[in-house]
Image (tube, rainbow, N blue to C red; front, side, top):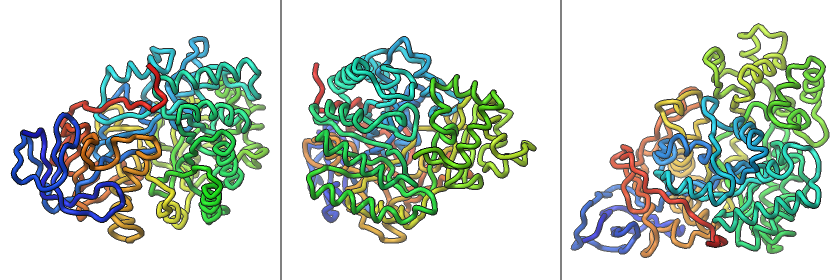
Length: 542
């Protein structure tokens, strides 16, 4: 007798091939039979007649590592059909830790956390961190990257300079240890300190370590507007010189001046692939992004860490310098305010109750509500009052660019979110709707309504393509011998309900979600179980 049989559905197996009718038999967490199982018996039968059966979705760019310690049930993630998240992106990972700089790392992480939460770091080595996560459990599988920013903080803090020879050796050791522990690669966040301070050669040297272990290099590139073309060139260069696959994170052309540049960047990726550079990208189906509010400030203001930044904002003279650089830009740094305008920058989440009224408001509105002399004053004061823990949503992309990137055969789907929940502390604020609606939105908008690409192509972008990218040889497809990460959904009813004004809403259309053969979501309801696994890269050494 089998554990589970999913019968009567249209199977989209992840390969990109057309759907076909087949039942799926599961035993011991794995798929053991695919075909006509009408004569088979099972402890649990799932009727999928009229529904689509596909591999579980793999979120190629997630930040759920920062909320997993508080919420292993990952509701906003699992309820949209995601069964595996790739975390440690944008240079931000929770390990490794230099205990002498533990507080600096906590300050660095705090700007990306939901404002009401803080991380307690109780590990040092990357292996210790993964062991802690394994013992805690999760409703989904988790694959880890090691963050360049975290590694740099361990070696040299938040200093705006190149590393010494000894510091570079130490960073290589930390990356080597992370890959030995099971990391899938290295990520960088080159618009965020300390990543913004590094030169290309530093990334190449660290990526060479990753290459030895068969990992990838995933990059939030150095610019997505004014410096987009050069930033993509840099990412490709890292791949070419280090011999490592390159993943360009949440690819976009940001800022009206640069809309349409994705024509060039996608062409650059194709040309690089012709030269033998394995480069691809991921994308989310929205025209707004989300990040920390302090990203609006110039790089030099962040030197020394969060407390130093807050000290600078308390100094009248330093405020004026920061304002000047935000107005004009400085060097190659892109000023979000200059590029996008205050009217397109919205406060997403704050820490304090007194400022909760500003969530969902842009800075034109906030200046008026605060009776501030200008938007800069409103911004600086808000950052101080929130101790740097504020997030923002920024409208910056064109729908044409989103459609172009998402339809490219080189793109896969990602949320660029952390897992939240409609209830409790993680239900506060107004996070980006991608936190809840990314995958259903792709089906509803681009498959059903616009017919931009087929159902089978959408599923490929969400399953076998990211699995191939990560080297997951037994996930990402519905095949015998593969782990039973499976989604059963109603394509006709699929809709993302999350909006910018009311984001904490689950999508409709997801009927069942199985993780390692366990039914986590049943008839659209979370079963509150934790069958997910920490996944390990092929470079892992015991």
